[in-house]
Amino acid sequence: MVSSIGISNLPNQRFKVISEKGGTFTLMVCGESGLGKTTFINTLFQTTLKPVDLQQQKRRQLPIKRTVEIDITRAILEEKNFQLRVNIIDTPGFGDNVNNKRAWQPLIDFIDDQHDSFMRQEQQPYRDVKFDLRVHAVLYFIKPTGHGLKPLDIETMKRISTRANLIPVIAKADTLTQHELQIFKSRIRQVIEAQEIRIFTPPIDSTSFVSNDPNKDSTESDNNDNNGISQILNQDAAAIEHARQLIESMPFAIIGSENKYDDGNGNLVSGRKYPWGLVEVENDTHCDFRKLRSLLLRTYLLDLILTTEEIHYETYRRLRLEGSSSSGDNNANGEDDGSSSAMPVKPPARKLFHNPKFKEEENALKKYFTDQVKAEEQRFRQWEQNIVNERVRLNGDLEDIQNKVKKLEEQVRALQLKKR
Image: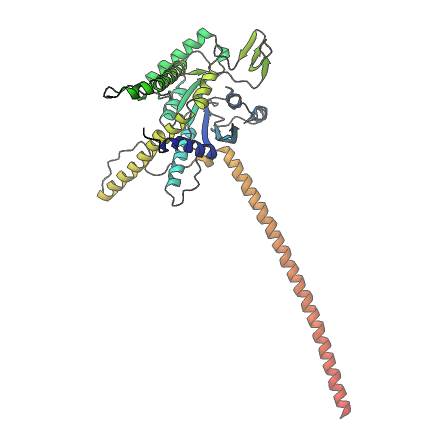
């Protein structure tokens, strides 16, 4: 019997490293205003990451924005001694105008800009600290009209799906009946399939699971491992069934609420209370909130991160490098066929500074810098004036002393003449 040499402890070592290092998850929420994106985020993480009341008051006082903003909220969540750095990317102003032509462009620019920023950091000689803000998942909130997707929704989802993990959700699902909701979901699925929009789906691959090897000659090892294999197969079957349930539920119909009510059994549950009853957030018969939370956090969080790293980022990086190399070859040969690659050869234009919020911050920083410069200049002028005044005083004192010296010299000469 061969004793173990210890290589099976590698997962335990890896688990310790990851537990100490923590993780990073970036989630973008996109959709029209008033669909409950902020409420859903607070409900998802069971904490107030973004205050709803302040945002609503500011939005009512300010005029309608003509451009889409990018609002970043950072937080560190801890659960069972594991820390997760969460970045929430909100897009206020999306779809709020009458003319929403190219309203998706700020979102696409932000995603591409984060890929480009991370690629630049990897090309640096010192890569100990890298700031990663690549979007791991995009929740696209669909308005519960009951009719179908708008052209803006189709075009935005089609462009986002090529760059990030897209997850469509139906907001405020409690405004539709169960029959209307099923019809609405069916119409959305048909449009997604017809427009070839790629959405993130849980992986289902039964061939990668453990199976019996027909070439084994020894039956003792099969008997010894029979229980372990049966347990693994049972877990795999449960995982496949869970993944199929999630896929069948897409697009997820969700309800968000930060308020808790009594469900009649003495339990406080999150939900929305109406005169005709209580709609529970974590009730599978009322909405798909638990399924979406399982997809985002509990079950497939690592798949979202790895898909972003291995598929979307690598695709962007490959297209950028291939575009650069092909451009160099064409320039060397003096040829230019005019063809355009999927990604620009040059780095994408960084358009974040066009964001009105960033513009206000930039103006505030400029004003603060100008005020500081003026204050320093005023203090310098005061010092200069003090130096001039001090020099005038010292010159006056010097002149007085010189006059006294001259008088004393004259008195000495007079005394010398009297002695003669």
